Image 1 (cartoon, rainbow, N blue to C red):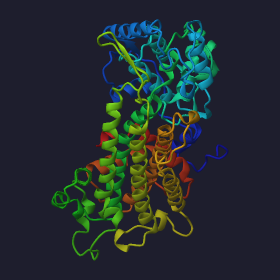
Image 2 (image 1 turned 90 degrees about the vertical axis):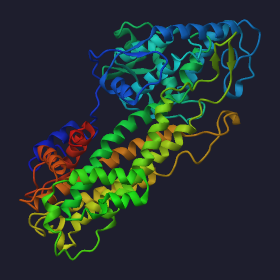
Image 3 (image 1 turned 30 degrees about the horizontal axis):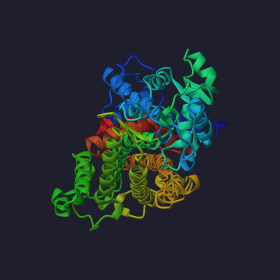
Image 4 (image 1 turned 45 degrees about the vertical axis):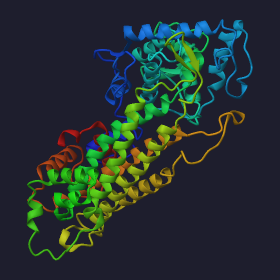
Length: 537
């Protein structure tokens, strides 16, 4: 692909040279005020600040006091002669094995080592950083019984841009995200692999040494607290919620641009229509599309004597389809925002009265797995209806729309954007496969002790891939709709649509001759991911 950039737009060539694995997120430790972990709930924006923009993290004094009270309960339990799960016993189906006091440190170290069984490509750096942040925040809520030093070490890794290398596959999302979190904990004890400021990976020991951080020696309960919990799937979900907002706003603009590109009507956006439907999402989408098209000269140009009675569903039914997706995403976000204030460890340490240690199931990922599966379904419909509008623009079967086949300057001699629709269709097909819920099938683990698992991390991975593919489909719609608008000049669309069109033209020039669409699609996808269209709305 790099061999011949002669017929590639300059912005597209740049997109190729930065690589198909481009990420708009880089860890850049800044002078932003530190995020104080005080036991309160995190916000999605705070997660993004730390994970993607390098905002530093510190422990609040109130949280330190809570950590100390929680730790004292654990230390008291070490001498009460009773069995306490994961503190002086084995784990999972080995919970009945009592461990002598002199071997408790070895127990925690062995736990971390043995559970680091992940495979596959490493998770993205922002996902790992978000996971570390959620883990640290959960521990500061004083229900896990760890020493303050454990949380301090996690904060040091975040603040010095040490990112553990965490394989993407290994968690079933029930007894916490055991394998991924174990790979993070390995680096804390000076083992495993890590990147430092994006370079590497190198050994965990080397990474800590470069940052002048001493490996931590884990005490009773601490290894278990580090690897128990929903922190990976919650981190993935928080980042996905942020990315959804950016993608969905772009999808609405692309839809509005397509309406004018196809010389569709705005009659279906009448507020009375959506008041009659009595659903919030469709009404909000219709309002957004109306605002984007406000002042359009193209809409007015075919109001009279247009033989068409109704537009295709992909135009006319955009509010109910996209509105349903929006409502589903709002449900997902509400769940995630609550999870960002959760403690998902086991056992839990309660400091009230004399203190008590309770074994339960807060680590189970089902409260996140179902919403994450739902998000992928919502993404399937955002992509699916966008691809149908791409098909309509390129097929040019409606003479009233005034478009050339495949938007080619000279159809026949040139193929224009013909194959861009194939790519959109391929993306949609893959999203369809990803939409099979991960959470509906069970495989038991730990000799049957863990007999009902959530597979939330697999739901998160599928949603992350679906969002990436959906972003490409929306980029293809933008590419086609922007070209189609040129066919209606000098007429102008609404101000917001024209602003979006200008953003695209700063990235991708007009199609006056055949050229590879791949770089242009990549460039627009990157623009969506960066938020170049955010100011438009």
